[in-house]
Length: 542
Image 1 (cartoon, rainbow, N blue to C red):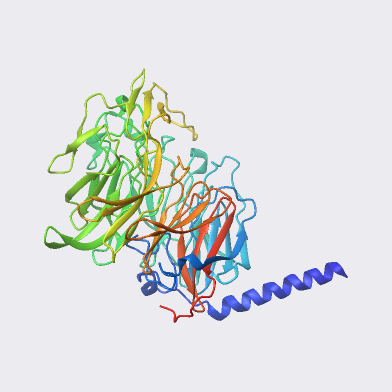
Image 2 (cartoon, one colour):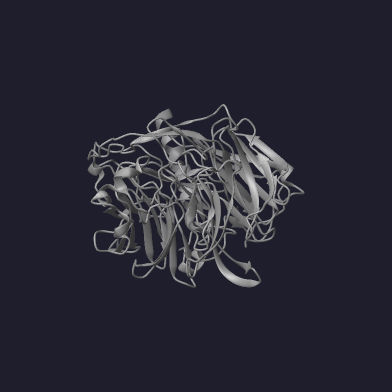
């Protein structure tokens, strides 16, 4: 009798969850996908401009101290979640590698789950950073390189498409981006000598519409930046979600490092389009412009950090800007219509590989600032002065927020030979000089000048940790590697609240509204935490 009782209870709970989901779920339109985050959080970066700023202001500086945990969902088998949940009409969609879960956003109750069965034994382990949604469909990618489309209400598979050859070593960790009926997906890794590409699929049928190749082939523009046949195993992975400007109809995707990582002798030249941000026509997949942050990178400084799109005055004139805090230690301001370099400033104290920039935006290299056989001290280290953790921009303060790491590395190179089949092809590495300054900060910069306004050190953190979230309540939320989830004053950086999750945080926070209550959510190592005010004041959905 006990077995039947438990079964009946589970069926009743599942039925209640499905009733909730069906009662509030509705098709997510293209128009909704283009709106700034408020009630919903529909993209990995919150919105097409990747500002990670929510219009919600129920949680604010005056009451953030009353924030309490509302629910925790343990993700079965998880140990290092990097997923950013998305929320549509009160339903949360959360991923881990090869699995996706639909949760009640009010309680964390499981509505449905889908587990992907791997089709290959030769699969690289790696993260999954999130899902995308459009109409009644939810999309995510797998470690064996499938784009899977599910019914958002019940988790049934609608179709799945093979993106890349898993046997070559490819995997697909980035959250897809849905734009104008197209699902945009990228691949990894570049560190294995695998050439990157970006795909666009029809969101309803799965038909491949176009493919953009990160590495130009012989005879194509940019191919002259690769010596000999080094273009064949050249890197340029597309492993983090990009941004989109609907007015210009351009995708902005930041690309990874060249391969091998540390020995540039075998790939002389600038090595386009690695370590670049590329502007791609959404309809055709054709390149409109590019800007290369680190020509001929030899320090594994992926240029894949998230491009943030802001319309703002620059030197007295309104400009459509693209800003990026790059792993190489500089903060960049570009005109995103043309790709024109406008400005760059040092975002870390210790940067010794470049002394400045030409008018065109080419870095001025310092002599002997590359890996050597005996070792060269280079700042920042290969970890970077920042990395893939998400930045944020608050239009109320005019400040750009990001996570910074101060630290150097002793970099060496060797003569490693490329081996097919997914082997690492790095030809060297660096030893982190942890005896020197090695600190992690949240920093706020003036958007257009790059001048630092404030910084707040992450205590007891020597690794970057998670990213940032900005809200209209004047609060910046920050996830730290030691497990602290922290709220900061957006104007001053002063800590105003914290919660110890007890596990490392290596993901980005997000926020959403259900039934008049604002929630703030973040994934830790194996769990997802959702917070709200102890006695929230109910507000209408935005």
